[in-house]
Length: 442
Ligand code: ATP
Ligand code: MG
Ligand code: MG
Image (cartoon, rainbow, N blue to C red; front, top):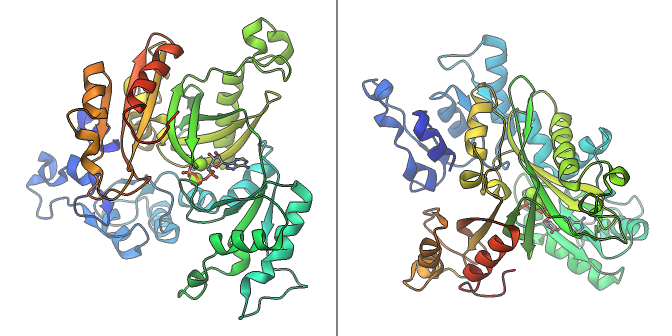
């Protein structure tokens, strides 16, 4: 989708991805850009891992600006090319600009360090603690996980149950999260076994056990909220509207834009709808946008590009930040059809040091439905004559299929965006589409 946004501006984009048929490589053919076509070394996509330093360098040698669409990348290799740029001024193999800065990607990669960084800068978060080995239960080779049990119990005592246990690294779509329901020893063991598989401990270069997990107080939110923020090279920020994200099994299924906060007299939510602005001051939506911009500013100077800010709306109307994605985000896909400038265009403007335009949400309401794979063999089910894609087309919705080679349960294979005259209108459209998908979506 970033490459689709680059196309109208004729910006050549080169992609690093392990798969030769990666979706982005299906969109762009950098070698045919006229400015480069006659060059002796035409631009080429790179086939390789995001963690492979040599491949990152190969990519860097071909470009002026490097950015990421996933945070699980080799930060040390990115730092190297960015530092070279800083010391030489760049050009011809002497380093390039990297946005967002590698150190910010590094902080965000480790969800615990991300929280430490944000908490130190006054961003409201659910309370959290690292899970480390206890001096009273040293790591034993027979049963290494036993060393973490006292730390888990300590977090449980402090935050209560259910307790959210999270992997610090390589987490996505809720993989790496575990809801621990009690201090029962068998339950604690099951949580640790799930989050730290024994096989992962013996891998070469495995992270130390004490660097694997952290605990978070469970946040009994009334809604999950997300805000996309664009931050330009000179530090200006633009917030997209606050939206509601609906997760099932920790995977985003549906996004409703803009957020319609529930009117809840008892807990003070929705005061603004009932003319009580003086009580709350600002609407939940405005506060979400302000908090999200503040959080991105708190990342520092190198925060250039678009960022997805996930938040929890609590029963008392307060907002807690859940996490930041340093890239375009699923919760911002609606912006392709619903905003004057999509999150991808905004990302390009930011990393190319262009000015950031105002962001306008155009229709009264929009919604996005993710098309998640439901098994390894169901890739084409969406495309059946009576399937969800045909229905979406008949309704005038926008269909995005990603062209991924393989399908599996929970894999994001595409999405559909609907625009409408009201929140009720887009909810009805999504219900009609979701009825064609297996399981209950909404
Ligand atoms: P992503 O795919 O967004 O990167 P992730 O794997 O990094 O997800 P989180 O965003 O930390 O995981 O959590 C996934 C979901 O789990 C959240 O969207 C929310 O529904 C739930 N969740 C996470 N933390 C908490 C918490 N402290 N209290 C309650 N629910 C939570
Ligand atoms: Mg995450
Ligand atoms: Mg998340």
